[in-house]
Image 1 (cartoon, helix red, strand yellow):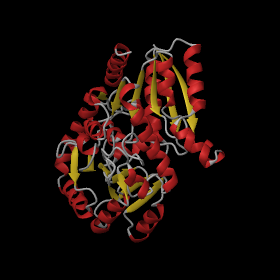
Image 2 (spheres, rainbow, N blue to C red):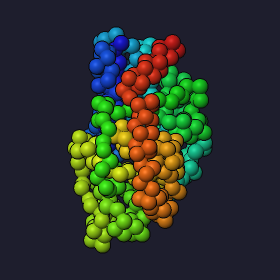
Image 3 (cartoon, rainbow, N blue to C red):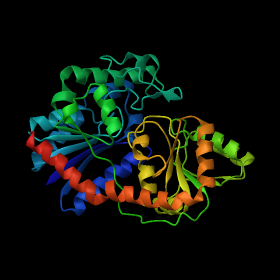
Image 4 (cartoon, rainbow, N blue to C red):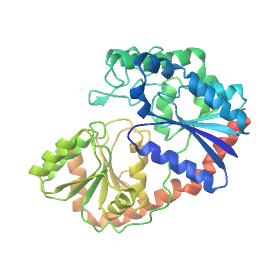
Length: 388
């Protein structure tokens, strides 16, 4: 099978890039040919705003280049990972012109929310969900905190909804969790075309010991990730347990301030993945305090692979991944007192941790291995091919 993977790369790499690259690598390992058409947001600075606006709605360049690629080799299908903003939905039309089926992975909520997050001013926002015209996203400047840019994102959504692009030109959509699938359906995407396939972790990092005696946070240091909730919880916990923080982001000054008043908090900055996995394996538990509707929760699954339980906010897809009192604990999102109480429970019930570790590892082995993911991906590709 020959697949053309299409991706608009962000300027800062994240979990979406890691998940996509893992999938492409897995396909190659299993004997498939994978070619990549990629644009990068590094080009944004070189484009005048009017040209970027037009390109976001319909990129003639991407349409032409993808169609040429499809004419040059016998591709089985195209797998669109992310088209926003430089590639645009025009690539779907290029595929239709050449009779090639389309699979689209939805790693965020871009097709139903102008800022793709369902998050505004520090809290969940569904003001645009299900609206034919997502005008609240423009009014509130939800994309890049810019009204003009938000208007372009909204226009892209309305234009392609009117053209029937979302309903007619994609053979199969992949949502990462059932929660994300339900939100996408509520936003107007065709339920019969959306299947669920989670991300996976490969290579298997193996079990850790959990003997480090610390809690761990891994992720972007930002409001939507709940970093402020985490630090407020540690203000209450004091020196009850060391907290290691891995990552960087706009709330880095808040972490620096926390270290000055709390000797138990240690900020490690960015770390290479092997080191992150080692930290996960030795941690007593990982904390996932997100405030937004995560579409998945890759960090939690990586922790499961190491046999490390997760204390997670009961919101979005992450609440679907973590089973309370089996693979970890849950707390009310944004509630530092509740998070502190769950951490305290872990500290005072050390006898529960070994069984939680076994359950977390079992969860990984049952749902998030490369072998299981490859089987599911082939089923999805077969569905797309059968509908072409």
